[in-house]
Image 1 (cartoon, rainbow, N blue to C red):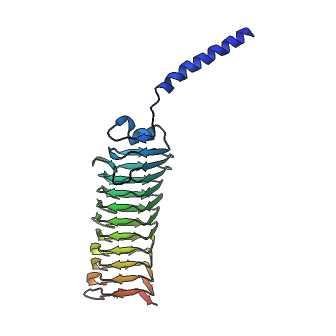
Image 2 (cartoon, one colour; image 1 turned 135 degrees about the vertical axis):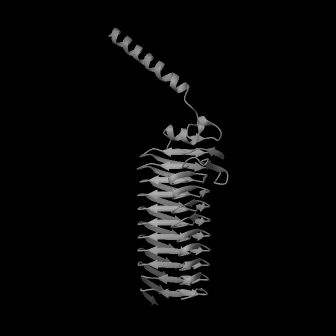
Image 3 (cartoon, helix red, strand yellow; image 1 turned 90 degrees about the vertical axis):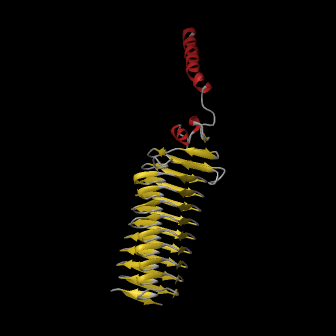
Length: 333
């Protein structure tokens, strides 16, 4: 009995000796990121396994990678204007890997670069939510500001601006679900499709949002390719395209606008909307002050268009100043 007690005491002492030094050297505030301090970087907090990371105000020069399957919430407590994550033009700012669930709140995400996909944010088969963020001045071949593929992308009160790509200057949604609420996509550019947003075969929902001053070859504001795009209380204005669809390009897709406005967009064909073998429905919406060089100052269509309680006015083009029906069906209710 005496021998047993002695052995237990020795084991207890050894365990304390092994554990105690680790506790003494544990990093305090491991889940708080601090600028200009490598030991307290955003990536260090991720690597420490933090699920909720407070990002103190300042500028962080980082390219953050979130591993597969992780759930992480980043909170810029001082807001996006004072909390900046800068990719330095050398890589994607936030890379979110398969199965991860990431929430970004109150951050500016800027100066990201990728020679392939996702300049500011790359979300690959993952869930990404942005609240009160600014995504600006990023570049990639596909998805200059944000690329989300096979996942869920949600933007709340977020601004995507001044980013560029060959396809999807601001946002590229590839076979995923993208939802924007109270958000703005502005000043982005694409060499080809979707200056503001390129939606490729996925549901795209915009509510109380603005798509303005974007530029692309096809779909200066939005290019919807075989997807379902639904806009409610949303403004698409002052966008331009070098080929067709200054406002929205709808190719083999379904586009519905409810209580929305498409105005002051320009393109050679389809100043506001070019519908290519898709369906377009406008409910209680307005198409005004758009310009096309050739056909369809307001809407040019080779598919099916239905307007209900909607207004098409003050648009201009060489042919079909308001509406141009090219081998399709138009119904005005």
